[in-house]
Length: 234
Image 1 (spheres, rainbow, N blue to C red):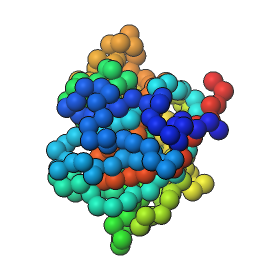
Image 2 (cartoon, rainbow, N blue to C red):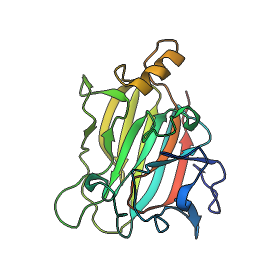
Image 3 (cartoon, helix red, strand yellow):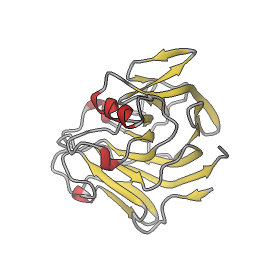
Image 4 (cartoon, one colour):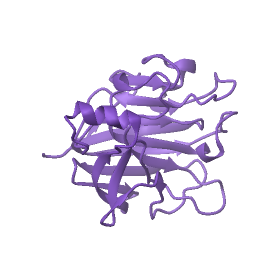
């Protein structure tokens, strides 16, 4: 396992926040404090759809990524109801340089991280697909999000999520050692205008074989105390 952040600063990472130029870390949204990678909003008056992503500098194709995360504090005023205790690990993503200035989410596969509200059921390590599709249970899956089979994690507890990524073949979501979702054939959505540009850049091939990894800022403070990666053989 290798740590993707050094515990001191954002060296090796690139910031892209909707409405801002790349590397403009508005409000010091992404920061490292006490060895923890934090998404914080203490300098925001309101969220204002400033969806942000922190991209690791190197793309990957075959790997396992492991994060330990927790949600803390209160959601920023102006954040959407669905964004309460909501973050994500974006994989097979486009580069931040290729995103439009006002683009809210990179074209990618999202491993959606959710925290429970205190009561009820709310799974984590779900699947969302901004500009993409996958094959789920043998069929092309086109809805934007679907829930995993994970348990609900209420409160501010640390949760460990791993994502096993094997190129264009298979992707598995694993929560606390239990596989909660599996799908195949990640691919670009030909109906999405941002994805169409990427398809053209791949010579018409819509399949995804690798890409960037990024962490989300969606209006609720979240902390990552580990972001580790293990490369797998091609």
